Length: 207
Image 1 (cartoon, one colour):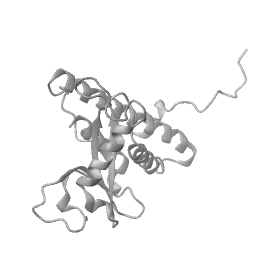
Image 2 (cartoon, helix red, strand yellow; image 1 turned 30 degrees about the vertical axis):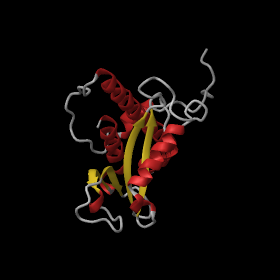
Image 3 (cartoon, helix red, strand yellow; image 1 turned 60 degrees about the horizontal axis):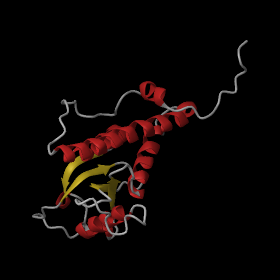
């Protein structure tokens, strides 16, 4: 649950008090139609309040490898970038067909690949969360806030993927100290210090 845990933290920091992030949500407890009360399918997280339409983003994270256990490439992985991610997306859509039939809920497959590739939905999800979070910043520093939150969250998620891969290689869970429940994250002035400069300074050189 290493990657899933960090997705929850990122979503909570972005949504803040304006929405809700529910980890390990039963599909039966969402707005998905035609799901029985005894259905045992469970999503990694459901985000309420991140969409302008007010709908729920039902997220399921997956980490895949372009290589098999024997070290050989997965089908089409050697020739097509992100081939295994597309296979994972099809499997998730087959697992949750109720979330693909329209309505107030949306299935978001948060796919990552060993080696650093992310699928389009994961990139778009982070982009939407960054936009939501940065919109609360004062207008003069909104661009810097956008860069800062994007850098923070992608750093967190990238490290989580590497920890998950290391845990698999070592055959045990990654040991990490207990942390307080994520809220809205660090203050803006702390995060914005990590924003990359947008270009070279136009100030004249000092003598």
